[in-house]
Image (tube, rainbow, N blue to C red; front, side, top):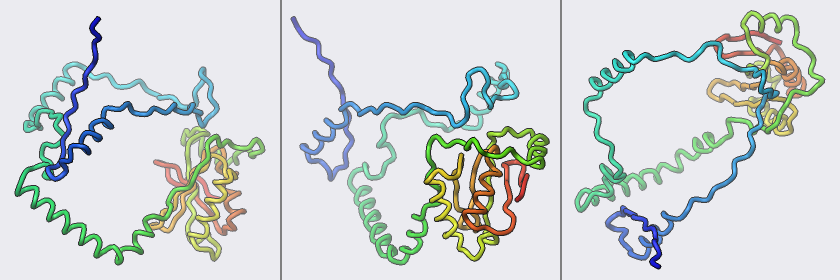
Length: 255
C-alpha cells in the first residue's frame, strides 16, 4: 500500500552575500516547525461580575448602515484612492537590500556609515538614554479590590457623580504636583508611590509620572477615590489640596 505524504513548499528569500547552503537549510527547517503554544490565563474581571446585571452597558444600539450609504462609501474610496496597488505576498518587493549589484553595494555603504555616525554620538546622548529608560508607569497587581472598611463617599462627591451620571467604577485620577510635595522631589514621591502600589496598599490603583509636566497621575475607581486620596496625603506627607480629574469632565473634586 502506498503511503501519502504531505509536502510543504518553502520560498526562502536571502541576501546575496548570505548564501551558505547549510545555514539556509537550517533556516528553512526552523521556519516550518510548529509554533509553541501557551495556555492563556483565566480572565478575572476587575469589577464584581454578575451575568444578569453588568455595570457597564451601551445606552444606544449600534448605527445601521443602509445599502445606499455603503455603496456611496465604496464609490468615494474608489475615486479617492485610484492608485492602490494589488496585494502582493512577496515581502521582498521594494526592499533595497534584496536588490542586486550596484544598488546593494550602495545600501551596504550607507548602512555602515549610519552605524558609525550613531556610535560617534552614543556618548553624547548617554544621559538622555538613561532618562528615557526611567520607569514612567507603576507596576500594578492583579485582583485588587477596595477594602471592606472603605467609608462611603462624601455628600459633595455623591452630588457631583449624580449630576455627571458617573458610575462608581468609572476611572478617575488624582493629580500630584510639586507644590504639594512638602520639600520632596517628584522622583522621591514617585519612588514611595510605586512601593505602596507594589504592596497593594492602594486599591484599584495604577500611576504614571509625567516628567515633562511635573506631575504624577494616580488612577483609581471613583468608589475608592476618597480613601485613596486620604491615604496618599498621609503616607506621602503631602500638603495642600489635590484634585480629582475625570476625562471629559475635568476636576470634579478636591481634598
